[in-house]
Amino acid sequence: MSIHNTDTDDDAGEGRHRRYAELDIGEEEFVIYDRENHQAWIQSTVSIPVDEKC
Image 1 (cartoon, rainbow, N blue to C red):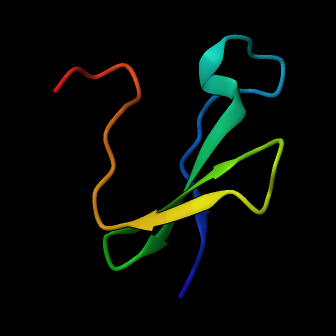
Image 2: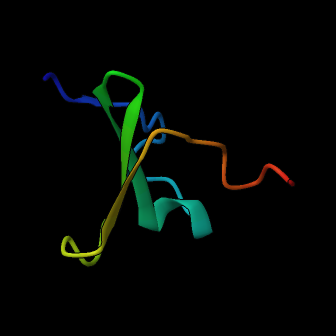
């Protein structure tokens, strides 16, 4: 298993999207985590942009 950070924002970014980041852990699985609370994360096989409306 390799881990790839797919978060393309730079560290100087601002806004509500900066608190959360996504890691692509392969096999079409993702981990979304809170940058301020590293104990808060979720693993999923689906990932969509935060600003995308369902």
